[in-house]
Image (cartoon, rainbow, N blue to C red; front, side, top):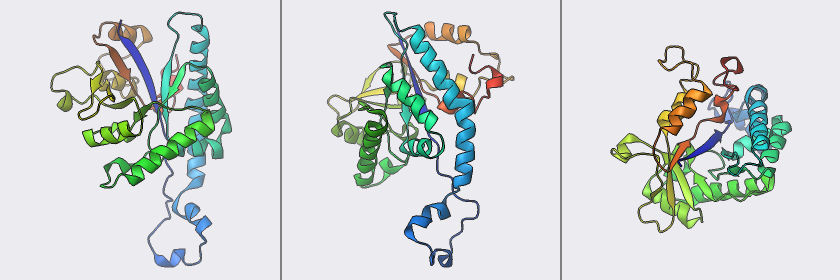
Amino acid sequence: MTDIVLVFEVHQPFRVGKGFYWENRMFRNLKKGELFDTYFDRRSDGEIFRRISTKCYLAANEILLKAIDEHKREKRRFKAAFSLSGVFLEQCEAFSKDVLDSFKQLAESGCIEFLDQTYYHSLSSLYPERDEFIEQVRMHSDAMRSHLHYEPKVFENTELLYNNAIAKVVEDLGFAAIFTEGADRMLAGRSPNYVYSARDCKRLKVLLRNYKLTDDIGFRFSARWWSEWPLTADKYAKWLSTTSGDCINIFPDYETFGEHHWPETGIHE
């Protein structure tokens, strides 16, 4: 039987302030602790985070908790995974601790896995030197232990960025697997629905996102122009059941469920 792997990306950025501009004079009288509020628009961050918390995070987490409870006595329990950025966790602390509490509930269920990533959801893996990348991964690991008492074993680089050099660093950091995009140009006709090995790595497994099935939800769910609209749960389940492979990795942004597609579209049903 093909495994269906649900992984949700969760990130909110620090947004640059609209009035920010590069002039030395604006920094002359600022203390170090005031620089953050000069660079970034905390008011917008808070407004956006609280809106998405209501429409997406809290509602979707409740749906997952209900699914976990409904299937807790079955042989194959309902399970899923999350990749939470460190910046997202900071915004939980600042703007909605209820969201963090709901993720703690999911962690305590034993049915949710959490991935490691770069703390700032950054492009540090592309820097010539690896020090910054490694530091951010360790920062993220510390944050997962601190907030959720969880030790991730699988890694997801920012926006699924991948090359063999990154894979080697990730293996050296002790991870068992890494997620990346199931890009057609990389697969050269092969299926993304199998577990692959990384070149020059002895044990690191490579898991590929099925972007077509993921984007059917992420981009096309509420698109009335789409020939498959409306996308129902039964229709999607049929597609999955007729797709061959060892594992089908569905990896959308979590904000898909209530923010990108509003609740009125039926995304929570």
